[in-house]
Image 1 (cartoon, rainbow, N blue to C red):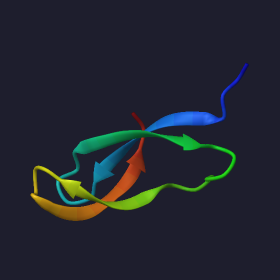
Image 2: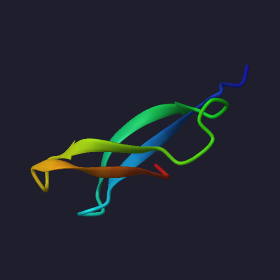
Image 3: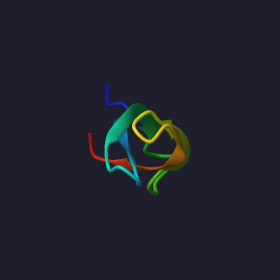
Image 4: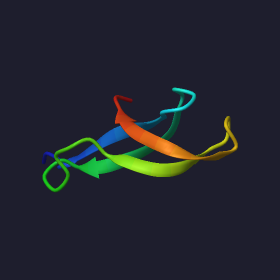
Amino acid sequence: MASNRDIIALRCEECKRKNYTLTKNKRNNQGKLQLRKYCPFDRRHTLHKEAKP
């Protein structure tokens, strides 16, 4: 049985490091995911964009 969920990584736009991994439903969210998350390297909230794991 095929799953509709993909494992993705979120990359910080400031320091370019991959900080978070999560799953995304391919059918519901077809575009690239963008979230404001906490970056432990910058020690503040920054924009994180979807990247390949």
